[in-house]
Amino acid sequence: MAAVITSHTELQFVVDTAEAGGGGLMSSTIVAKGIKESLTSTLTKFHAGYFRVSLSLGGQALLWKTLRGPTDDTHTLRRTLHLFHPTAFTVLWSLSFFALVLLSILYLLRCLFYFKMVKEEFFHHVGVNYLFAPSISWLLLLQSSPFFTPQTHYSYTVIWWVLAVLPIAVLDVKIYGQWFTKGKKFLSAVANPTSQLSVIGNLVGAQAAAEMGWKESAIGLFSLGMVHYLVLFVTLYQRLSGTDQLPSMLRPVFFLFFAAPSIASLAWQSIAGSFDTASKMLFFLSLFLFMSLVCRPILFKVSMKKFNVAWWAYSFPLSVLALASMEYAEE
Image (cartoon, rainbow, N blue to C red):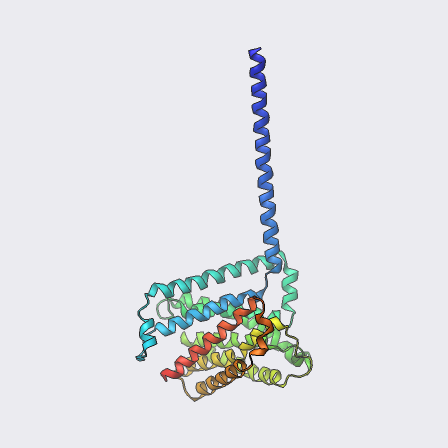
């Protein structure tokens, strides 16, 4: 009888162990399936427009670095900012860097598993312009880095700059080539405020090149950006039929109207070595466009009713306008 009981006990123990093992395996399968579904949902909804976040953080990092830099300005605000520990700026730059790395990894995964969606984005008249945002973000972090400078780590900055500018050059050929070859009304049909990101990409690249001492490359990128900015600005200013294709939720990108001349003034300052008359003209243009938008809050009423990632479009233009204002004040 004891033997039977022992056998029954052992049998029960084996059954319980098998059930426990099966339950653990099932739980692991459910968890893995949940992670896969979550990742799939994230990658299908993710798009290049999310790089507005890294663009804004990069602009803030560059602004803080400039504000904390050596200056003869004795204004109370500048003295107050110098009281902050350097770690605060390092934390901000690191946050910007890791946010950009995370967004870049997600977009690379999207390219790998959902290339068809990326291709559709590439041929979309709004989506293609946000493909400039990752490169612009990397260039902003290059200029604001607290860990190395072109003088101390020249080879690193060269590699960083080349890798960031190459995608801009490829997209320039694609976008500007279409403007030349698709007919006289093509630009008026596809132009929208986000198209200015293509100009901003060239101007940020020019500014970074000038700070590295590459004057010829800086002038080349600056001229390319400014020529197309004039064409684009006139096209958007005329508001031809077919150009009003921007959803109401994306109206914060209208702030890019004054971001482009602000960046242009900073880029030309880096090339010329001073905030001269040309830089001041571009700065006053950006200031005028900024005031024109601020005086029309009804334009952004619909987009402000519900939070959207497009809200990040406010931060970057304001940061570069603040940078240009600071350079003008110091001059």
